[in-house]
Image (cartoon, rainbow, N blue to C red; front, side):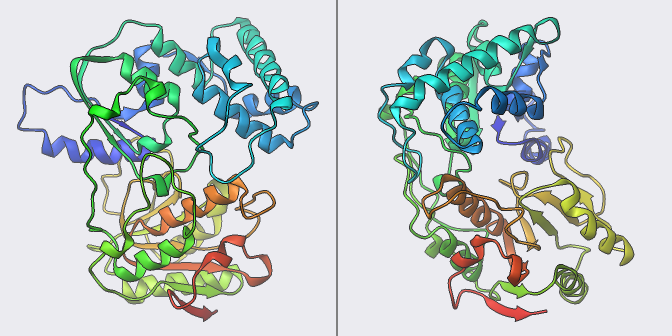
Length: 402
């Protein structure tokens, strides 16, 4: 079973340990694509993401495209095309990448030159032998297939075309491949068809999960408003938020200084949450120092917590408060979700309502809110508010000033 991130892999592994315990004749591996590929390839060296990004920005300085858009386009090209097929990118009609305008064909040869120059530098880096995450998929296509009988890919909408190709290469004959996906929660521009990965979905069986077991009607309606109007992919539909049946309180959206948001959240936990049996997640678009004040406040109030961002081991302790980036919370669920400091600084994006990063952020926030079973609390400072606040639909939340 392959998952989108390490945190989700740890969560699924925790579940599988009990659910598969009675099946002594079943060998089960649960991992992210990257961890599975690295293990299969003997642990190759992977270049640091920050180093890779700095190289690409430097090499692409002459391309008439802003550097963030250039990086996004390079991710798209390297994720969709194998190295020997990247020339197919130049004449391609672009589809399936949201509402953003495609990169002009005149710029595409220059982008391929940047990619070629980058991989030339990578081949010579520290004496050679280094890969990046895209080359992992390519290397997995160049080794003998491992003949898996059953493969499950969770959050399949966020796997690149080359990652899907690599998985297909390692299937036995016959095989059972299950793709679990929700295109409303697609975090990265996929931009490919299943057919080009070697999957024949004309012979596939489809099962839509109609019932929303996790959210209350109120949480579902709040999340639905944030992604309302987004273009649908060709491989799925928006989740049926009307399928939620349980009722609860409306999400709370509090406006005020960050210190007041945090004070309100701590007091709300103390007054409304039974931490002996209920879970709380503090989620943010970005990690690192963005959690500094939350950690300090929890410590001062004697509230134990765990940080689960990018953590492969699912926590086994008694703590029922988790700190996580929104990305790492993908696929998880909590009784209560708290998102504080939703400001422009930690949700940057380009211009226009069709900007791909803005569309990504809308999906990301809706997904994060959708992690909640019982309640949602969102906070922002009006003078520094993220543009995402503008997608909160009136009457779907309770507004407060703190």
